[in-house]
Structures are given as structure tokens and as C-alpha cells.
Image (cartoon, rainbow, N blue to C red):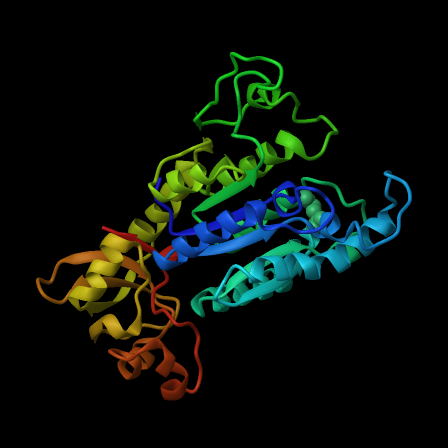
Length: 365
Ligand code: GLU
């Protein structure tokens, strides 16, 4: 269960377990896990709930039933606390991205969010996303962030989505009621029976709990993203994930989607040029799932435009190792090949991307 780019969704119960403010009780272990992933070269985007819970004790409310306006006010002040609570565990900078699901339906906003996250990841920043609660037109319901995380995973082209909460995963029966309930490690297809196992149905009005997690998984797997529900209150869960073992329930990505894209790249798109790579780049592409950087390029053949497909060849033995979409034209590449990505803007006067062929747009042969 290896992963290279993951969205990690953390629920309010982990950020503010006592509902009186943020705590490091669970977030410390989560932050340590994220740091280890980053050290291994993995890219992580965090979707964190907890704004309302963190702001609860700051806004006078009087009754346990909170109005929407009061919840928004709490979320807005709690968001600052929540961000500060995360940042204290990271040496690297964190960024705050507040979005609403409707933003992702607007193409310009979608691209804007995607580019912001891409540039931040390339700069070693941890993007932390939450719903922009002040601007939501509806009630703030627990579970919105499960669905938001699935959408963010699509925007970032993540290969995995981890939904962290205080439950181990999906069980054969309700584990709170039945002592013989068994955790289901793998779910290949999300059917009505799966919703029923979670004590809900596709059309049930309940929010939060298992239903929105399964909904999120359904959205993500359709886009080729493996989705995991794991217990973020247990530190051994993170040790398992780092050892590439599944400690919870895994919903398998729809393999047809991945196959269809690879098939299109491999068979339908015609290569317009050739790029030969040094052995470091070959190793990074083949063994580490990395993107191609200008520094790994030895030679460029034929004339191609940015956006054209190119063959990627091992310079040492002339083996055809991959095919992908070049983000730069052959003439731009002639000028930046062998250089560090930081030099692209100085040499070309613009920086389309730090990578020449992104691994999302590449098929290893
Ligand atoms: N955006 C809400 C908050 O920060 C949480 C929504 C959710 O948990 O799904 O409190």
C-alpha cells in the first residue's frame, strides 16, 4: 500500500477532543507521521476540521444547541487556534487554505486552488485545508470535511486519501453493540450493503459518522484514489502506515480509471519527441515514482511543443523507459536541461513548473 501523494483528513474529535480548545493529545502523533512521510519524499495535504470545536469556549453561547451564526463565529476564531496548534509541531511552514465545495465547481477557482497547492508542495510547505465556514450558505455539519477531503484529493491528484477519526474502520457489525464485530480490511466495491454495515444507507439524512466517510471514499475511488479509514487516536496506526501495512479499512481505487489514463497516454497519444535521462533520473522515475526534473535531462531530440507527449529514454542503454507529457517545448528544454529547477525562471524568464514531466502525466513502460 505504498503512496506518494496523500490527503490526510483529521476530524474535530482528534483536534479538539474535549471540545474546549485544541490539544496535542492526538495531533502530535499525526504531525510526526506527516513529518516522516515528508522526509521520505511523500507529498501531504492536510484537511483539518476543528474550527468550531476550537472556538467553542471563546464565544458565549448559553445553550448546547448552537445556531448557524454562532457556529460560524466560533469556527472563524477557532481556525486561528487550530492552525497555531498544527504549526507548533512542524519546522516546515504550514499554509491555510479555506474553501467551499462550490469553489471546486468553478473552473477558475479549481485551477487557482490546484496551482496554489502544487507550488506549496514543491516548496516543502504543508497545505492545511478547511471549509470556509463563514461563507457557507448552509449549516456547518460534521462530515462536510470528509467530502471536502475527497474533492481536494481529486484536485491535487493524490493517489491516497486517509480519513483519520476515532474509529478503527468499517466493521461487520456495530462494534459498540456486538463484541463479535470484525474489522473489514478491504472493500473492493462500495455497495448498499456497505452503507448498511455502517448502520446507515445511501439516502439516510444523518451526517458525520461513518456515512460521510463512505461517501467520501466513493467519490475518491471513482477517481483512482485509494481511501483508508483509520483510527487517528492510536499511535501504532501510524507505525503500520509507515511500514506500508493497512491498519484500518481500505477502499480500493477504481483500477479501470487508472488503466484508462495510462492506456490513453501509452497508446493513443503520439510521441512528438525524445528526451534522454541520466541514471539518477531513471532511478527516480522507475523506483521512486518521481517526476522528471530538468537536472536529469541529457539530450533532447525532435521539435515538440509544451503539452506534447514525449518518449523518455535511458541515456546509458537507449532503453525506452517511460512516456509522458512535457510541460516545456524542446527549445525551452534545450536551455534548462541539466539545470536545477530554481534556475528555470532566471533562464527562461518564466517558470511553468519545477518539473518537466509530472508523474501524474507519465506512464512507466
Ligand atoms: N469546518 C468545520 C470545523 O472546522 C468542520 C466540518 C467537519 O468536521 O466536517 O469545525
